[in-house]
Length: 268
Length: 263
Image (cartoon, rainbow over all chains, first blue to last red):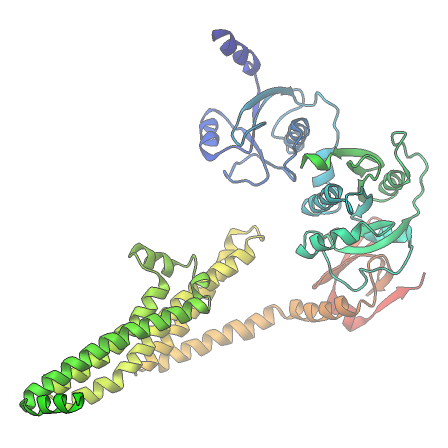
């Protein structure tokens, strides 16, 4: 078995930093003695000094690693071009995977920026993504549904859109993440137009027809009007858009007119 | 038939023997009544959901260390008091206690002692619970110093409970009362003074949220700040102009009025 050991040694030789994904307390203790690992987790359970908060338990390992590395770069925990080893759990609850990556090797996808540097709070974007994922999983009576949520910069978005019908959320104070939103999910899928959500997560309006300036919006061919509207509104304002596609059932997040994140609801 | 036999038997006894018999019966009745009272109280407390409410308090934890629980402790206390009364009465029947006056005084004092102990216990549990609830509420505020609030609340509750207990026992509490008054004055008056603007803003904010004279997306001018409303919460309204975001306290909206630009 010495070949295996050698292989592992090769992978972890000359690395500049370690990223621990959701480590247990004892594992973190062991690593702290040898250096300063960066902890990437949904909550800072081990009180790590260098900590990147995961807004979602990304099922896709690639997304999770990418988020962790971008977060570590953004916070200055690691430098561009450093060799990093990521320690994470892929199949089980416990750590079972070690992978090596060079910081800044893949182009910045902006997935970290999407959460942390958007106008809306990270928890709001996470909640909206969860609502979209939930809606994508359930659909309506087994049929796929589509939805468009525009998050943040609500004042500007409201000024660049018009109502399609009476706003059911007028004078209501429903926030995404409230338990009642789960109950309303089914109703959501019936409403046409976009949902407008404020920076703090208040659902400002439904039934909005977005009218942004759409010049220069470049989204992959084959995606429909909903995605085009999402791309355009995020280009025209500082909002983030979360789209549930009716045709392929994927959840996509837009920022600055580009697709930042693509998630399959079935995987969550 | 049966009662006559008992009467005949009891008439055959001497006075002291009869007293002893009555005392034993009373003692047994006391044990039964005490146990009954304890069970009733325990059922009542469980039915009221007290066992869930005290979960996690340090009093409950201490009780667990001794292999019991808060409810068990309280119900046993009630039972013990009932039994104690019975024991006192039976002792008087037998004539073990020297003076009648002592009994009278004890009987008058015992309920007060009971209430005092009860108040202290309730104060302990409620204080602990209040601390836990407030701590949980404030957990989202990531500021270590904020735990002072919950500790202060707990100590206040304990202080008031202690005050009630002491006055039940007839201890002079005038000085402590003055202290309480000064404390309450400090909290309410000075607190009110310190939070005056926040309270005024909150009152105005409730009105704004309820009747929504302007909504997110409207263009307004409040006290010289003109722009698009981005957010309304209880305390402030965020008004955004090109590159400038004004955070306007809600009390200003009520005091100065707001101008909404009709689109």
